[in-house]
Image (tube, rainbow, N blue to C red; front, side, top):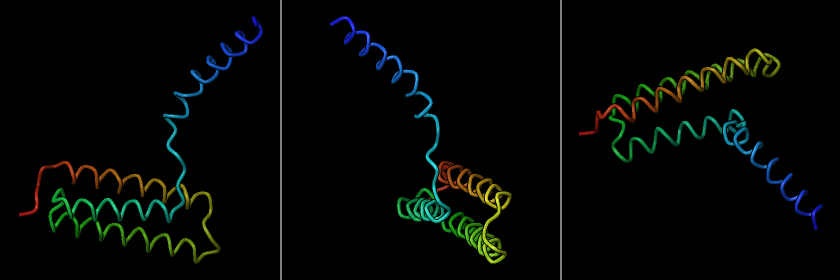
Length: 109
């Protein structure tokens, strides 16, 4: 009985320590998943009025530029580690711009 309680206590302690790390780490997404997510967020912002026409056009243009860059990278023998890191950084920046534009209170008229 004492060993069962010790085992349960150890499992709880392990789960408690592991949970904050797992919760703080963003799950990895493929480039296609990230692109689909960004596109969905822009579309959602247009539908609910959080993005006005100019904001949406500008963000979609930046999205297309990023998609072209990715295609260029892939044409040169696939993605290198450096290229993947560059795309990740650019996706993060675009994601931040989408968030800022959706929260800037400039609404569709």
